[in-house]
Length: 180
Ligand code: ZN
Image (cartoon, rainbow, N blue to C red; front, side, top):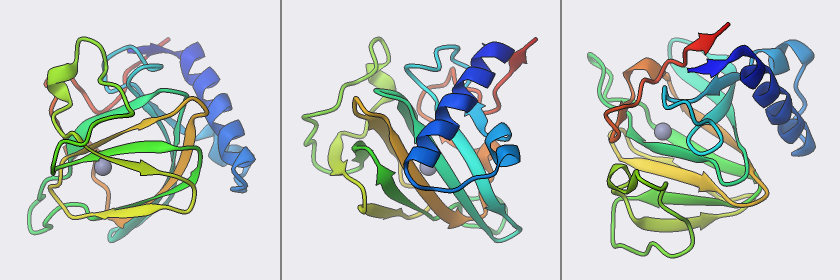
């Protein structure tokens, strides 16, 4: 749960970061940025800000903004009906992002969210900078974290069904509740 003020604040900060990264967005788009706290009520530590640019029955294009040291919790995109699940390409536009995937444990530069270590099981670390991108097959577990300057990324994917995403942290609720 987050307050209306927190949402407004986070939207404004995210819009500033996105524009500073050179991505032109309209004011209505800025007002439509989704502020996601994953139901954990600690947006600064675990959360993400999402602007959806395209969402059709087949594809989706989003801009993701992470505040300094903010972490997007570990998750994967499961099959839904006849769809094998979301295939996603994440491309960094601004800032440095630590990206974690299945594979050899090379964890070195990021940090595990305190008290939530068991919810971050992927420890293969990629350090991604502007111009770097990665394509994730459906079902691949991943999580990512911004460094001190925050980060702006594009996410290009097959249709996003965010409400169906699966998280390692069982406390997570994908759809954020806003308190008036
Ligand atoms: Zn994802």
